[in-house]
Image (cartoon, rainbow, N blue to C red; front, side, top):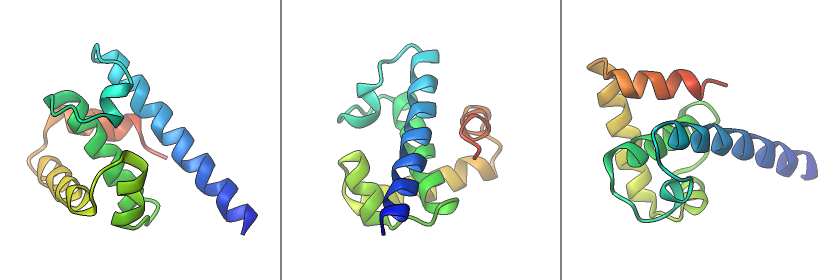
Length: 102
């Protein structure tokens, strides 16, 4: 169990650091990723991080919601939304996905 917790901490820590770097590169502070901001850029970065945790690491919607202080339905929305943005080739989303690639 401790190994799983350590791995969990490592994954989340690494991914959130990448997200914070992205936020800073776009001119935002890290707290926008965890706060209630609905500004488009931090929200899309947060959405990509949620997507990564769900699709790459198979976290539950509930667990991801806990990490970002969001309801699981918000996480579901963002996973679906990021999928849509990727399918139309949204440049920002693709750049965020590349930057957060495991």
